[in-house]
Image 1 (cartoon, helix red, strand yellow):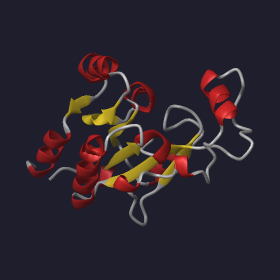
Image 2 (cartoon, one colour; image 1 turned 120 degrees about the vertical axis):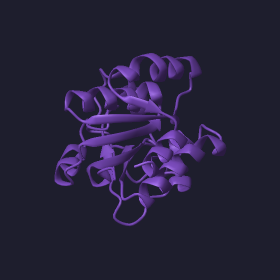
Image 3 (cartoon, one colour; image 1 turned 180 degrees about the horizontal axis):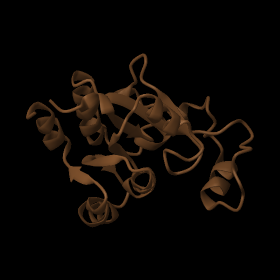
Length: 188
């Protein structure tokens, strides 16, 4: 039996303002991964990006931050920062709020993972070239065992997604489809 109590499925940036840019069928792999994690006692942790009213966390030298400050709508209470209904958390599943691209930046994710004694992260999210890439790099530097569910990562640029999941991510993580991951859970 795999040691699922040491693993966590990270559902990153599947919040209304980001997930709504994609078709509902694009979110099916995330839904399947969440269902499989719950059935196999793998912790599901949600990560979103959101800021306080007035954006005191955003430095105008940061181009992403400058755009958010200019256009607004990413406060912690805003509809755009709430987890998308299609992947709604169950009670007890943490929602981590981050302040930059990586799931670790400005969040309490590391404390939660350490408290739960998690050593393996299964990464999913939007965008492959944003939160998934940044979190993968930081998690690897923190010595987590990593898996990436390639079809549960979305990016506005399909070529960038392909290069990352085929050439970059395999250097630091096991990259597999959601179905292959689900099958591996039952194979042990």
